[in-house]
Length: 603
Image (cartoon, rainbow, N blue to C red; front, side, top):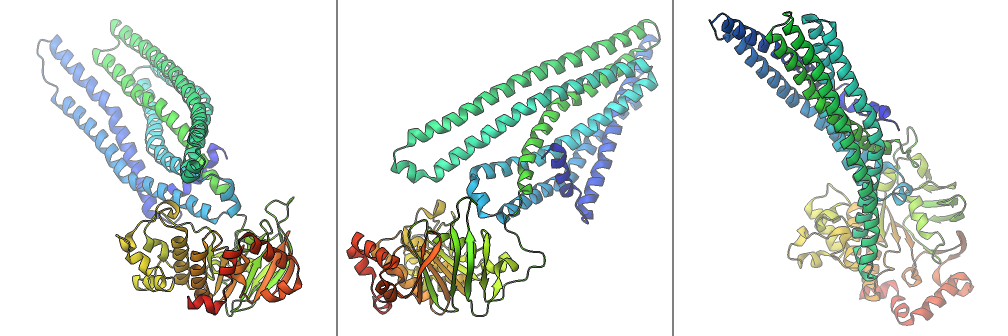
């Protein structure tokens, strides 16, 4: 994406279609800008008249205070400032709205991208790009629109006035000096832009490195790798340090060159004015007028150099944010997609094949059905593709071949929102927001009342746990829920799913990371939740699915066996071998976990 395209993408946020309130503010702001500059260019004229009148009076030994010229001078300065401040006030809502809408568009788009995109990108880098991009919009609007544009307008006005009042040489020298200044600024700034881009990229990488390390705080501590992580972070900072030094050096080159051009132009024009006074063609007031105009012109030109650098840097940052909007949605609703209609909740996989990489297929022609209101378990060794099934059912990815149907409706033909509203999941690793317990439970249905949240907590058996906390429902759970134990997080996930009240449930190895005692309690909760609902259970521990209506064994991405627990054991195949290995690995835990549903419910 180029800078031109980035600006084109910004325009709809400044000049929104059909929003005449915002457009009106832009028009009023431009009118105030013109008024401010018109008042500004009259200031030196009134100054000249005051000096000439004083000079004439002194020469005639009858000095008179030029009241009208002085008052006009003061009024012009006040109007110039007042118009500028009023313009900023009127336009501020436009700028803030543009920042908010642009950030919201990127945020919505990121949530619409596939899981593949988010797994391949670092969260720290994304957040940094959005943060820099929104600030860049503010910089671009506040500096470019109300500094570069007014400066160019003032250059034209001053050049024309000098030509009119004096001669073409005054106008030509002024124009050449200004043009040389701008050309030099653009040339050096473009060189600096490449260096600045490297600095921004290295800063983003360093920030992402730090966030990634802090998110994995416990892992770093487990392995005692604090120095290793510090070394990696320092390497990233060293790259940033070198780029920052080059950026500052190039800035010094730019500032020295700009100062030389300004000084040269000012000296030449003042020499011409002094020569005119000596020859009797110009008055002392004319000398003051020329000097004041040039100083008044060079002041925004000094800012112009800073502003141009800021604009170039802002364009880089804004481009990095808007480039995210160019990322195509791998999974998108079809035009005219209808909402999913769930009657019974039957789920059917028909000859589904899929691979995260086309060179490495994960699922190969998988077919099975979860009848409405029944429980089907998916088991198999690690890497068999079990969890991939849940990602396909939620449409985090689309299958390469085959189709998935719910009550006879292909999930690619319905809206993603309606599909995901119909499915509730309790994952293996429940990730909670760094907010209160109430917020995390209510996330299942954000409009739920406190009574509904508490009822879900009772059904998930976390009401007693919450009541025992010092802050109760207002207790914060920490980053990713790290303040809670594994069992507590799973119960929060169960309560969240109960509150959502979906017709289809999925338990993706929901208890594999828990101890046997906690697992039995969570299994009882899950059994209560799934009663009468279509349920797909993805399990590592076979003991947790012995009561399933059907067990499907996946191996190397294919369905190897299917049937009930007893039938599969009698078959003596892959399931029986996997069962034997787990029994041998932990006979006490497995024996305790193979209680029947009735026994578990009686505990």
